[in-house]
Image (cartoon, rainbow, N blue to C red; front, top):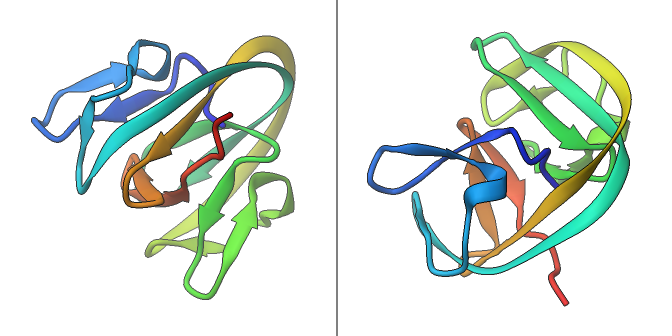
Length: 120
């Protein structure tokens, strides 16, 4: 799940805050088919060698070169979609996480592949 203020890239090249994503939005290589907002307090900011940082819930599922991995299980120097992790910061702050479900089962979050969340 993604922090509501995390930027999400859309298929048209624009970016919006995760809290602004709606069903039907076109993301690169996928369409949003479901959205859920879930109260969350445990966040991890993931600093990437390639530049951007990502703010995700501790149970956000990334896709690494071999398998899926939860944000809470990441370590420094882990590589995600070709970008090495240079830093990890745990943050405790209440916010409504955005769980995104997409048609392809995966989507790119600032160029890093993520698993689609299961949305009820």
